[in-house]
Amino acid sequence: MRNSVRKLRSSRGLSQGQLGAVLGVSRQTINAIETERYTPSLLLALSMAKFFEVSVEEMFHANEDPEDDQ
Image 1 (spheres, rainbow, N blue to C red):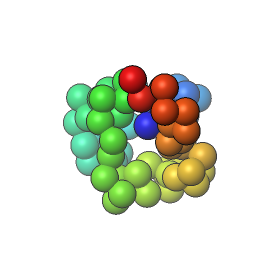
Image 2 (image 1 turned 60 degrees about the vertical axis):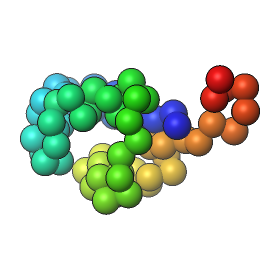
Image 3 (image 1 turned 180 degrees about the vertical axis):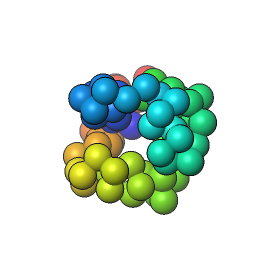
């Protein structure tokens, strides 16, 4: 699943640790989301969307091309 978390975070001038603190998760969790090694829970995704004032759909994008998953 692709996402724009890094772009949104950077546009606010936040470090991964700062964003994690706001959301109640670790810097490592934010890093794993940004590098697409971890898909956040629905509750965390909703919290992130609310914080960045975007929809979950704007922030997270499913891979629509099956070859992208390989």
